[in-house]
Structures are given as structure tokens and as C-alpha cells.
Length: 283
Image (tube, rainbow, N blue to C red; front, side, top):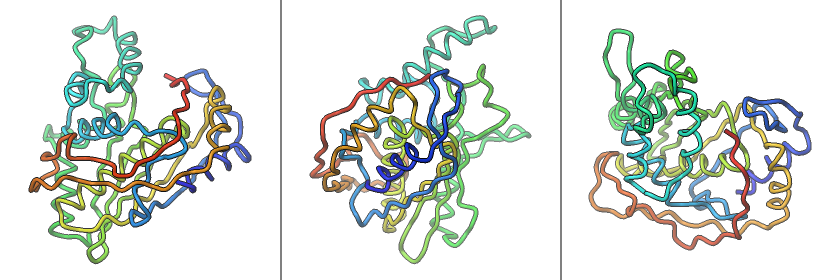
């Protein structure tokens, strides 16, 4: 994770002060990229603790195709990372006709777009399953893409939060599988370590069911920012030396499809991290 820490240094040194939707303000750079080789160990942050089960349960929720926060909590009831966005969404929609206050619906966010993309003629496309099928049947394809950004379904009244990590593409070379994700908006302190771990885990899970070797997660960042009220926390994190990376273990129960995984299948071995550093999430 040294490359992630180097990005934090770069933003503090080269970034510009910008206003933002939340009103907090950021230090921001545009257009960064990092590669994480899975042979170097699983890229879990060690300069503070990664909430592993929270991250895994969110990914499993996306994979399920749900946009309902209650389904997330049924996977892991202690997952609260979407609570603030959900509550903000409720406040924005209190006067909307037909809206059931507190029913858990967050709109057509990540998982819904991954698994139930709506076409103009009323069909639904399971983009994630189509990508897995292409990896198996046409691995040289340059169209193994999943897109979460749907311009017709991103209005503030329609979703709790428009997708930040908005599209990803798979690449097969020999027996090696890589994943490249583009992220339009990148909260470098709170969000990005989650995103790195989540998409690296997704890479491993799909490599597992397609009998390939997980190779590289390539992360391209659009607006990469540090919120102004988290600058001291970032500096504190940068004063720490990273520890050795852990190893991912996926329990082999004969899973053959992406929907076959459960939370207890996914474990980090030899994970050591320094104590947490807390910061406010901007909503």
C-alpha cells in the first residue's frame, strides 16, 4: 500500500483547494492511477485498520443486485457505512409522492446497475454475469465491462448517492485475470482504501470461479481528494510505517457462480494493522 500513501503525499503537495457538494471543501488532484499486483499480497491498508467484514458485506450486497439497505444489514448487521447517505436520501425525498419513508430503498445504485441494468426497450441486463460469461468463453474480448453510471437514473431524487466507482473492465492474459476500475470521485482517506480492497476482492472471487489467477487491480482516479477536515488525520497516517500485507483466503466450498459466496468464505490471514484513525464522512 505504499503507492496509496504516495498518492496522499502527492495530493497534499500538489493539490488545489476546491469547494464541493458537501460544503466541507477538499484538497484535490485530477487523474491518478495505481497498480496493485496480487502476488505482492492482498492490498489491505495497514497504517490503520481496515473494517474487513464491513467491506466484504458491502461487496456481497453489490453482487446480490440489491439497492435496499436492509439487505446489506441482513448480510452483516453492524455495517453502518451507508446509514448517513440513506438518512440524507430520506430527507431529500420526504415530499416525493408515493415514497415510503424508511422502507430501506436507496434507488438504483451499484448492485442494481450491475445486475439489473434497464434498457430503453424495457429489458434488464445482468452486466456482471455477462462479464463472467465473456471471461469464460471469449477471454480476449475488449468488451468485458460493467457500468454502474446510468445518467437517466442518477438524479438526487432517484438515488442515495450516484456511483463514485462507476465502471470496471476485465482483462485476461494467459491464465491471469486483471481488473481495471475507474472512479470519478475519490475520498482518499475514508473511501479509497475500502475501494482498493473491495475491487481486489472482487477480482479474486471472479478469478476463483473462472479458474484463473488474480493478477492486477488497476485503479484510475478522477477527482482524488482529501477533505479539509481530514488533513490532520492524513498527516498522522503518513507518519506511520506500513506493515507487511496480509494474504486472502477464500474457503473452497465448490463455489461455481458469483452468487455462491457468503461472508464467512472470505478471510484475511496474518493481517496486522495500526490502530484506527477516525474522521467524519462528508455527506
